[in-house]
Length: 308
Image (cartoon, one colour):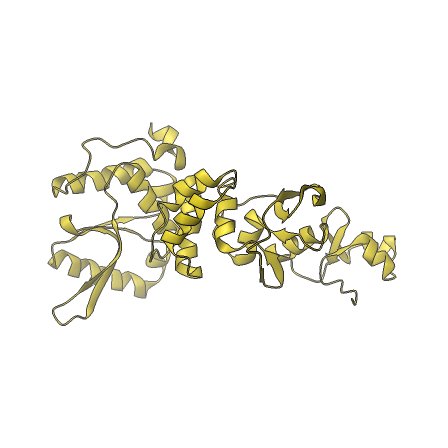
């Protein structure tokens, strides 16, 4: 193959192509891993780093776990190491910054020119790296963006012999259809883990003519209560702010109660969010609402220690 320095390459291949060691150590090349370089003219990207990790492995290796998620664009938290898999123990090659696993090559697919774990396999692999809530975020994203069916995800986790399959199965039971964003998933999980009945996801409200009047992210129709996450875009863009004011007025006319949650209500003070929702649902007499909030949410959300 023609040597292409804009793609990650081994130092030995660069030397064979006529580059000197002095040149490779100079500002014209960027080191991705030990003995893996790329031209400094190329912008650093997650995909480039994954390619660099695979350059250190055998041709049959594939990107898995967090690296597969990065190739696909799945919403995962920052994970420093790259993860690759091979089909047999004797093929594993250990390098700093790259974790090499033994996996099942069945279901490996090609995405963006890279061999990666399939969607369901990646979900199960991630169960060993992510928390319950972060894994449900990935599961909801797979359903919304990749066409994974929640019921099939559960069955795959039940059949899996992966060492972390039980963790994956626990998260798969929480995965739902039609979830629009990771923050919506986090808000739903906060409510459910605190003991609230599970809210309806993305309920569509229509008028007498069947026209869509509004859509609620999370709601309890029996109590006419909606709980929604609003990002900064709703405040910073005047047009969105004006639409929200009109929408809130329409909701008041229909006797619905809208509880708006912002990022600090999830990341900084989740207990305050739970108490707000709890007061409203108790006042509206929703069946199944506990008299006291549960504690299962605490290990999964920032700020729980201070709240305690």
